[in-house]
Length: 171
Image (cartoon, rainbow, N blue to C red; front, side):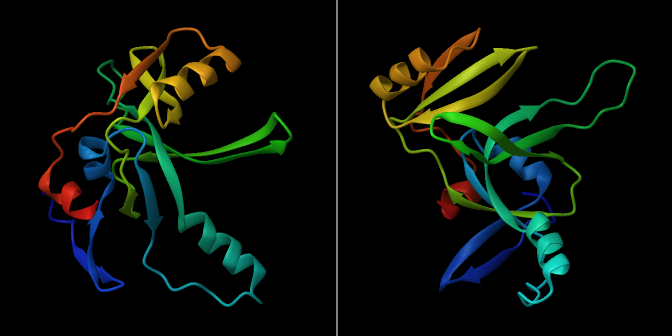
């Protein structure tokens, strides 16, 4: 448990607050996270301030973890949150993803962990796994894979993963 991990009460139940390093090390792919900077939300009449605040306070699904570089360049470990895809009918026009280094000043809270029996559809490339779809079961995953063609797709059934104590208290 890192020193920057703290607890706070939300709706009467303690919430587990994680830093970027905790998310990278312990949160499984498919976890829904809320990220925030601890500042109060500005009034709606301040459009620009509200938009800036929403940029630092939102939710997203953990879809990728990037290990630190082992080459000459010094890149820190990082992770990617998917905030959603936008489009019309079946055509996706825009996918919003946020990339964070483990040193980000933001705080994270687990909203939802993937349930046992769900299926992760992963796109494996450059020795990394990227979550493309989190299906409720294998049949839904296979249907999604037939409609969405990616190379190097693999499925992974979510089991009773051994999660650190701090994550199991949050779920």
